Image (cartoon, rainbow, N blue to C red; front, top):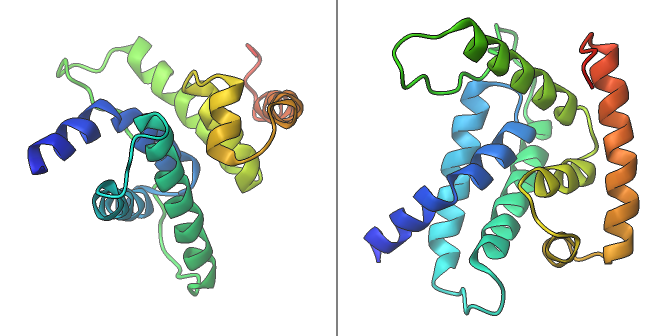
Length: 171
């Protein structure tokens, strides 16, 4: 079962990464949340009956874990210190080109803007960015397909305004 679970995590790493990025502010917090998502997925995997797609199940568990993690983080006392606001994507080539650096900056800017959204709106945009259909998004979030369409339109407009305000003109 360990090997099967590891394969599932490897195949769905993008889901966990995107949710983690959207619900954390620095690398240490991301690492903590990622670990917690893995624990929750491991503990709940045996209860997965296949009534929905595996990716839907992973989204539900990961989003619920992220929301719980965020509530706990708000209760903690703010500690002074330097925060690492930039996550670094893996550089497999060994040489970071200017193009890769710019791409990483754009991704960080997008996640900064996503982090400013309400938690429900973050979930909607993450599911959309992952390529889920409106039906899948509605199933994961427990809201209607029509509500997904309305929320997504509003979230896109907020993100566009935020990106422009932060100086990214190619929106």
